[in-house]
Length: 131
Image (cartoon, rainbow, N blue to C red; front, side, top):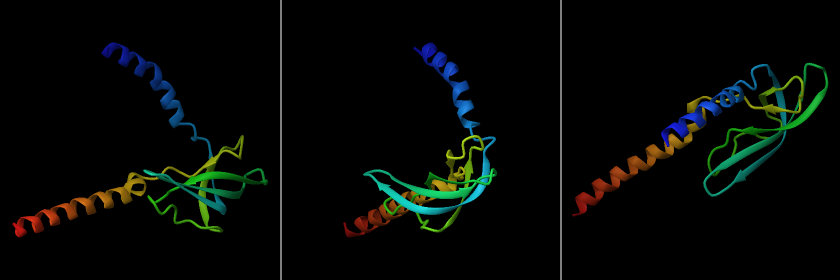
């Protein structure tokens, strides 16, 4: 069983590495947000923005990109805000926001977790004093 899993991992890993380098030649530019859409589901929040930007070829393009979203609340970005995006110079309609650092992506979750742990210990102390 281990050998099968290792074989599959060995066969799939080159494709995963290629996917990571997919935006290597993409161009960074500034875009203006035209619309913002928050999609809140039970366990996750995702935010998308319709943006407009001028590519290196001089043409104006509109496309949708995903924004950093705060759980339950959505994004802090609003219409007419300027954001940095990466776009494919061969197909400018393909764009995305640059990857964020670990802290930017998960800081809210870390703060929520720290708050829960802090509250748990305070409740435990209060419960111990009561008895």
